[in-house]
Structure formats: structure tokens, C-alpha cells
Length: 147
Image (cartoon, rainbow, N blue to C red; front, side, top):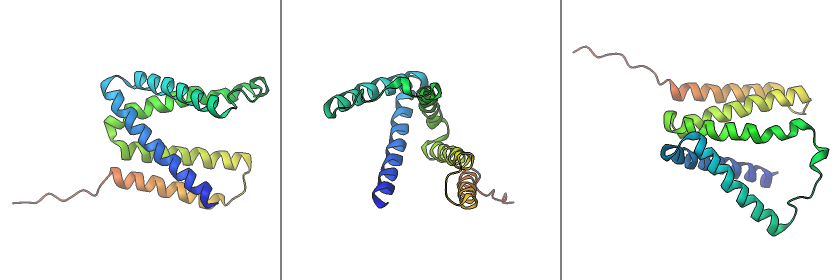
């Protein structure tokens, strides 16, 4: 279990780094162009890796339902949105809001699909993330000093 958790944390670190790099590229180009380059370079990279270790075309794409291919367009929107948001609201706020959205969709899918686990604890976890986002975005207001 620890190895899986470590891999998940590493993936999260890479997502944060990737978002920051794409946000920087978007400042020099545009959110759509940075998304284009992200996916093109990613395609070349994963093709080289898959060819080197085998398994590029190991399955039968026709066996997958049509909706299984929606991950591509959803990923493009995710990449472009992150690239557009980071220069405007910052990497930390973008990451927190993305994580909040991921947690909300994850909990909803777990509930809909009947995944094992404590739904109440998951909902509390999402509430804590949203509270953290709110607290980080809305610092306490200071009273004006009368001089």
C-alpha cells in the first residue's frame, strides 16, 4: 500500500510541476497552443517509451465503449484550463481548486458506482479541501486603523 501511495504522491507532484511548466509556456504562447505542444510532445514521449518496452498496441481498441475515448478531449480541456488559470490565480490556488474538483468527482463516482469505503469520511475530506481553498483565498479582513 505504501508503494501505491508514494506513486500517487509522485504523480501529484508531477501534475503540479506539469501545470506550472505549461502555465509558463502559455505566457509565451496561449493556453491552447501550450496545450497543443504539451500533447504533441507527450505523444512523442509515450510512443518512444511504448516502442522501447513494448505494448504500444497490445489491446483491441474496438473492445472499448465509445465513451472510454472521452478522456482525451477532457484531458485537453484540463491542460488548457490549467495553463490559462495559473498565470491568473497562481499555481497554488489552481492546484487546490483542481484537487477539490477531482475529489468531488471521485466521491460522486465512488457513491454512484458503489465503491467500498466510508462515504461520510470522503465527504468530510472534500469539505476540508474546500474550506482550505476558501481560507487561502479569503484571508481575514483587517480593521482600518484610525489615525
